[in-house]
Each structure stands twice: as C-alpha cells, then as structure tokens.
Amino acid sequence: MNYFVTAIGTDSGKTLVSSVLVEAWKADYWKPVQAGSPTDTDRVKELTENRYHYYPEAYYLKKPASPHDAAKEEGLEISLENISMPASQREHVIIEGAGGLMVPLNDKETMVDLIHHLQARVILVADLYLGSINHTMLSISKLIEERLPVEGILFNGPENPESESFIERHSPWPCLFKIRPQQEVTPEVIKELAQKFLNYGNTKS
Image 1: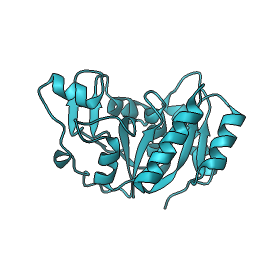
Image 2 (image 1 turned 45 degrees about the vertical axis):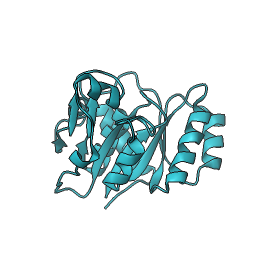
Image 3 (image 1 turned 180 degrees about the horizontal axis):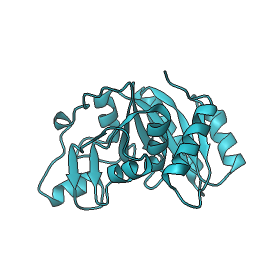
Image 4 (image 1 turned 135 degrees about the horizontal axis):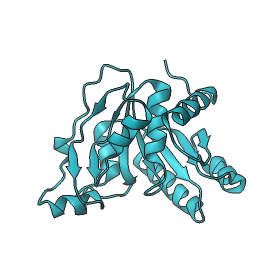
C-alpha cells in the first residue's frame, strides 16, 4: 500500500511525519515534485539514516514556490503523465506532497489530482495554530468531496485539546498519532517517534 502525506498547509510537518512513517513501517520514500532546496528527500535520508530507498523526484524545480510557479520559471509545465509510481520492492511507499491539497501543479491540476493519479491512501497532517481548525475542516471536506481513501489524521504541534477534540469529533477518520514539539529532530528522535507511532496502534504487516 502506498500512502500520500498531505497537510492543511505549507510547513505543517509533512517531512517530519514522512520520516516517522518511513522508519515505523520500513517504507521507501518518494517526493514526486520538489520546489527549492535543500530537498525534502535529503532531509528524510538524514533522519532515517539512509536505510531505505529514496526515489528521485519526477520534477525537481529550483524556485522555492508553488510547483506551477516554479515550473513556469524554468519554462516547464508539470504533467501527470510524467509522474509514475516507482517500482518498490517494499510493501509501502511514503509519498510526500507539496503544500496542501489545492496547491496547483499546473493551470488546471492540483495535488488532489496527483493523489487520484497515484491511487494512494491519504494521511492528513494537521498542525495546531490559530485558524488551524478551519483549515483542517476545509481539507477534510475536500477529501470527502473527492472520495479519496484516507488512512487518518496526524496532529503535529503543541498540545491543544480543544482544537484536537473538535477535529476528532468531526472527522470521519481516526487520529493516527500526535507529535509534540521536539527540541531537536535527529535520527534518534525519529526512531523514538516511530516506536510511539507503532504503539499508538499503527502497525502494518
């Protein structure tokens, strides 16, 4: 099974969550579209001690911007036809998106279209900040509207019981895990988080 890690917005913690999932499920990793450097693939390699397979991007763009903007900067247009799932020998591949669900790939297609194209199950990362309830509920509504298969929601950020409980009550999917702020993110921290994630009941055979 392949899992697509998306989020309620940019800098929500997709790379952190992807690293935890790679470590916990002994999965391969793939970032189909990368805009800007250093790359998220390099960061995941650092955090998971380079023990898994990290597939090259279908599109590597220099400008740190929305993919459609970064592609235009280089005279390119991102096409779903040029993005194909890598042939992994492992049972799971963790696919990391760029930004949130409605981030444009080109003038017509968004991350939602990429998820449909790759036929992956969604993991939604919700960071916790003022306004995050609205952004999370809008993302949930879009996933329902698109009838995408969703594994669950993963919270990332300082504990916020009111926000978390409201979202959990109104989400049709379970909370998979809650990551609290770390003083430093190292391979050792990722291993600890991966074990806690598994203890939360997220084992995969």
